[in-house]
Length: 140
Image (cartoon, rainbow, N blue to C red; front, side):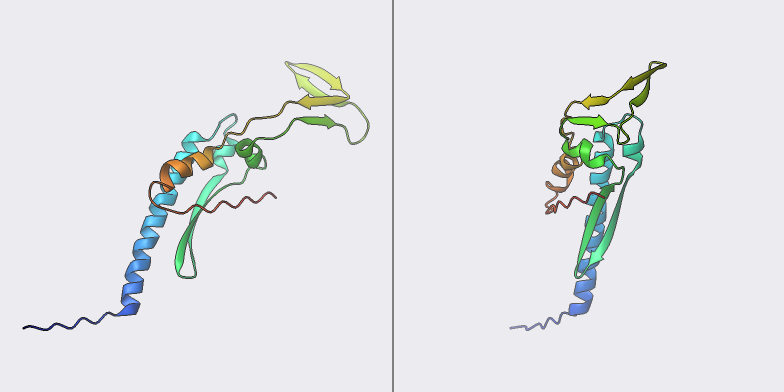
């Protein structure tokens, strides 16, 4: 009967695993970001241009983050309630509509439905790849 001895170098094994994990997280984050760019609603293009992603190490794991920094990104993604805008100075609001100057005491904007482009991209790319999604919304 033949005997064999196997000795594992835990440090080397950990390094190989971390390198593979970084590759998988980077690839999936990039694919999710690219899909969110396609799904992102476009009016002026500022929201789409404000997007970015990064992959960084957290303790003994890798984390991919996708962020859209436009001030209104959360309102587009999550929707918003109806708004009434009034002047803070008590004067009339002034707008130019179709080349005409318009004055108003208040402007009513209807509620906007959510357009969850990033959540949809996550569901289409990251979840089928076997990743766990941690949603953290930061509104500045």
